[in-house]
Image (cartoon, rainbow, N blue to C red; front, side, top):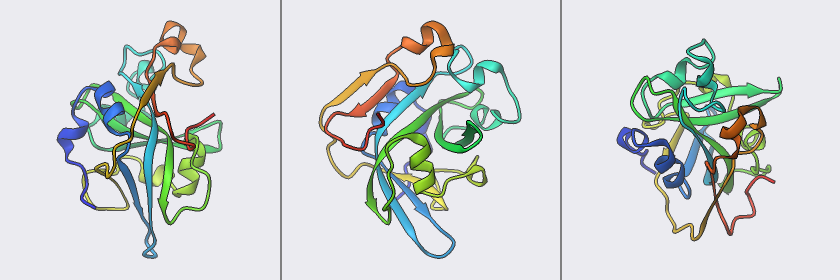
Length: 183
């Protein structure tokens, strides 16, 4: 499976969030194991003006990767116990990303992958993968979709009530027929 090119991630964040549905996350481990999951749920975070985005608080050590070039992983921890996987989008400095909320196991995965914390745990994703270049065949990359995903639904993001009006914006996308979408 060939990694997606940087140009794929350099597009507008909402377009990338939709286009990622059906794409495959490939996780290669040092012991030779390879895990593959098909993305079925995403959320778009549009940059510093988006009050739900981490970058809304400005450039910090935590958000530095978001301000970098597109096509890199932005991995952070929430609630002191769950890692979340995001893909940086748009040109460098824009500080936007797509959160991967859910994926369907394709190979090498036996744990649940519905929800960003479960997905990261199932793929052994942690801060060591922050800033990894997703456009190169390394420990973590994204390959093109291998199937039509069917109907795509859209709604508000989950867990961002603190963001005021931004919490209600329909920036979450998911594959209607998937049983691996977060609840």
